[in-house]
Length: 372
Image (cartoon, rainbow, N blue to C red):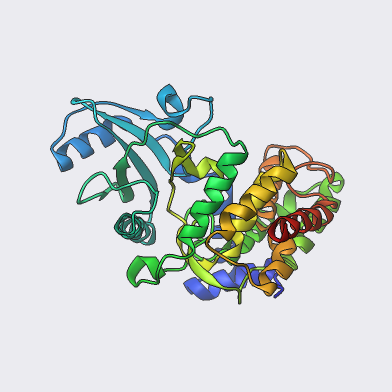
């Protein structure tokens, strides 16, 4: 159940996978982890406009980053998902979403897989974004681009009914029939580090260790305690392997939903694929517990259990897995703070010494809700 790791092991695994020397593998990891969310950098909109107009035979009046378009975020929040996410407005008033990903052959292949998964979801009438064209994936300057239909409504305010609806939708996702092709590819990880760590949720732990590797030599004395503590957390984290699997989403929480309550659609399928189902539920629970914890936790469990009954082993391992994504975020934040010249402290951020006890309390409330 425990995924043992270390700095050197992360680098050695990278070296074996690529055939690189140890020093070059470490340099590549450090480079990747210095590129803060490379996918979210602004894309050259004039170039993209010409590319889309030529490929699809359309006339575009504007292309705006999604967080610059007030129609997409009525509550002031951004509903995009890691790629450069842009609103493409046609001359006839139609709108598409264009997501631009990093330049690599593997990434382009993953984008093509994203489109295949969206077709699969549509064939099962699953509430997800829909491709905007029969040929939804193009390549520009080596970057994969996917176009989907714009969904009105923006990101919903995450009240208790929304938590329950999202959990119910997740349960539906986890009961879809098995299929081949991209639907069976490894999935469930974040996929935000330039392509080194894609696939199953355990890749988030490898990415988290990579974040720490990249600043190992920069950590000052004041931050050393948190650095060592985070390293131990990653080394002993539960990777969810061996648990029941399903087609799952890579980052499942209310920012992955757009529309209106009662008619939500799930977006951002870059990290989707087949993997342990529990991490997606765990992250939804973890975020639900941030506010109005008792009611939101109960809402998540009630919604999900309409479709899925967790196994005894899943309930047993849930406290450990509840903090998997939070640990990824904390290691990312640690790296960013160190690179900015700051000093991360033990009493801040997504992960603190009390996080395990908090996870136990959340799971106890979840089990009570299931039995209530």
